[in-house]
Length: 621
Image 1 (cartoon, rainbow, N blue to C red):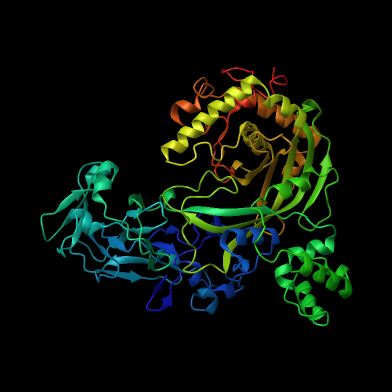
Image 2: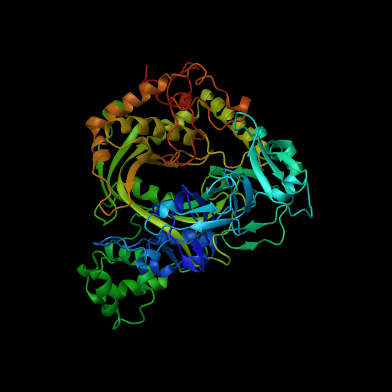
């Protein structure tokens, strides 16, 4: 946030929030002010630390173009032993923001105007950024009351965001009236019909209830194509403006790419060169190599490189240069298949710096259902932000599908994107393919799958998405997804992590394909270098996992919302789930890769609806 050319600190966010919840273009509703995170053009790249993950960078280039040079972590102010000095150069390190919405309201007299109209004055507090605020300096009813941001904005599904058209709205169209506006409440409740805006110069006034619904469609002007985080307007936009509330989640939906750091090369050195290729690809000769490698190794950027001599390292660099994929041509946007290949290996690699696994016996009680279990003692997940949408979330979320119109992160084609990395542990469970093939052939399963497909078609039809069957994940995915949710809820009761701290990653073959890929990874991760403490891995051992799966399946058979939950029919209300609800299957959205969609207990265990479609039917009797 900048006033008079001097940056003013207004708050703090965690680095991961810039990728998942409050990235470029997002509104940050702080205690006293509201700001918007500016586009990548305004960020200082020199204050950001590179995040190295070659596989993710190639996928980002596939999405955004080959001009993307780096994945960068959001800027972090260095730790200091002494007291915080708000006037030091380090105090200026951070993500740039600007005031938005630009309209403020005095809660005492109701005056509604823009922050730079001369009616409001910014009062910064460098020692307590959370106390920075605007005041109505010449309020007739009080002495400089704190002004609050206007709570109404407008957005369209093409990614545009703008201030609410207050003058247009209250005057019911274009008007030459320059009168001051006043926002006030009429009635005991704060429902929209009791919120009014009026012009103090002419008789015009209007209830905010008229901004919503069918009336709102007629009351809103054409979209101006505004991108406030970039300071520009698109030339044309045919999108329909919709009112949104400040702080509402539908004003910013992230479009992310996420990968696990897995070994994809034959040996350690080749893998290290591939992972750190962005650091090494510019080395011109073998003579220069030691002068580059040694400082990077001492800084911890090339872990394990000292095990190899210079000749070996240079040979590996030459091989990478001759056979590596420098561009984005030919790169498939399939981030899970390589991970599945590693997990499905009969002898998975287990001694890599960011990937350490151990194969254990599957639970004896579920022989024939679970074919293998892998304890992931160490993993690294890297996430990158490639865009965002407004009003509507990205298309269902299956990798490879096209999202709704994606708003840009920068004015031009971005040369970097925000990224974060977390480390942790997990449990990988692979299902038996032969048993799954038999289960998918059951008539009851096919009928239940058709009911879920009808709900999927209705959901897409309500949103005018074509074709109607696109991106339906199939019964196998629904089974694995539901299993992941019920087991995740059970694990959180015993491992010490809350439900929101455990995440899922589903590996499933597509509809109509043989169920060769069928597995679930449940993991937890933290941004520090140590990751987590081993509580999840301990529960994956055979003596614990069988008991936990049994308890999870037992709880899933009966829901406190039954029989309504178990008898829910997706096609009747065009929903994306069957027998599932908050009481039995839903988890926090930070844990679910699909927003609590495509869940159905009927495919997992017997319910009041019946037992024929249940995959675990015979072990739940």
